[in-house]
Amino acid sequence: MTSPSTSFSQRTREISTLLAPMRRSQPGAMQAFNQLAQSALAAGALSTKFKELIALALGVAAHCDGCIGFHAKALVALGATRAEVEEALAVAVYMGGGPSLMYSADALAAFEQFGHPAAAPA
Image 1 (cartoon, rainbow, N blue to C red):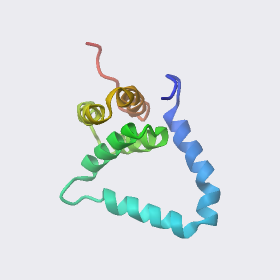
Image 2: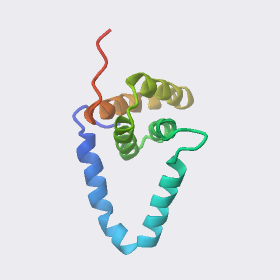
Image 3: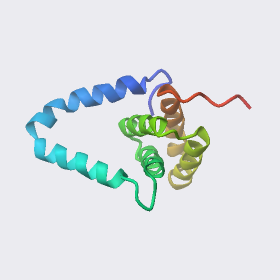
Image 4: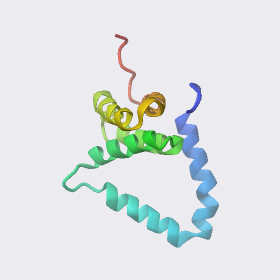
């Protein structure tokens, strides 16, 4: 789990920078991965937003900070609501237990950092 001060915007930029040499040395593999992502996330029977919610939940279950950052950013861009994100995270917690609950806090922080306002205190 990341620290409360983690900047997911900074983390996603770091990952992109760190992968730049691999994009140059392995262009075929990296282009194939990009094509896989585009194809998997394209709207079909499920909307792109719904698929990004699935990806965020899987990133939480896999404890992948980078996945959480990239998919939270995409969900903000797609206009996802906090309620939609929270429901997807509830499924991740159901399937992954306590560790997924801890990473759900990171996912909500990332969602807020990329521009979605925090929920009002209860």
